[in-house]
Image (cartoon, rainbow, N blue to C red; front, side):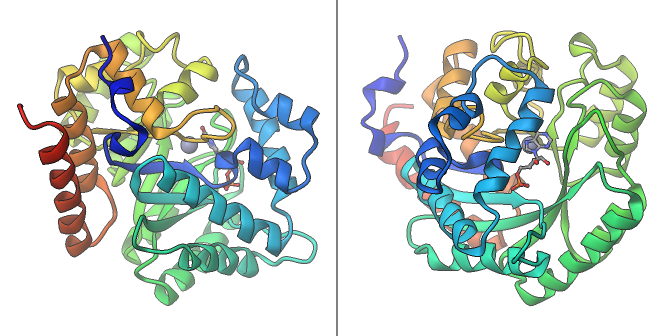
Length: 337
Ligand code: IMP
Ligand code: ZN
């Protein structure tokens, strides 16, 4: 029997969310508050879709956050909702963009302002800024230069760069990420969401700080033995987003999700929501799904959260604090381990 429902919500495992896209995380109620009509959100919340559909669905959220006020409101809401789900540390990522009446700089400043305005007592928030893989190398570098400037302005908040966007389009440019690394930015790269052996190998060899998804790496899940061997030498933490992968049909089912190979071989991974609004999920649901499908104990689930501290981009002092919080929770809730 699942232990999870036995816990009242306030006693759920305290969690760390390391892979959440801001605009994909907008909940139904936030979208409605921002004027989205029921029928557009209806499609947005679909449970049967594929990667192409999902990428057209992001436009709904992008329309909702095209003004400074709306973006401020939406960002605050996303943070509050993660905090309500017992997330104590959140790395939120977003693609800086301009709109009529909002420059790219204003977009970044607004997200920073929203993070600063949410009380730090309950949840610690860091930002990753995303490069869209559909953009040319020159454009990605241009955005990176802007990000480097903001990292220098807000060093305790802007921690890294992500590469995301439609995985069937665009490219990973190693020199862009080498520059990011040279400027002290952490790197988190969406990798192997679809089969693309050559790119996957290039990314793994670059050894980013974390990989997003990592679906088509293991030979049993469409990768190759060679890539898997290279991956195992590098041991890069993978951000596993089970519901996202199942809904996008890049994983056949929860039971057939590649996370089990990471569990079996004690390889580094964390659990994440990806786009909690689009996929109608939450981090506690992702933990529940893993517990139910792979029969993990409370202690093993707790260990996933604890390991995430190590993979996070928090400072050493912040990591110490997070470990303390998790240990307090464990002493109270898993006394007989
Ligand atoms: P935003 O960056 O805050 O605008 O969040 C939405 C954006 O995140 C989308 O337009 C995509 O570029 C990116 N994104 C969200 N989910 C995924 C994913 O699963 N794979 C790749 N990119 C994604
Ligand atoms: Zn993602």
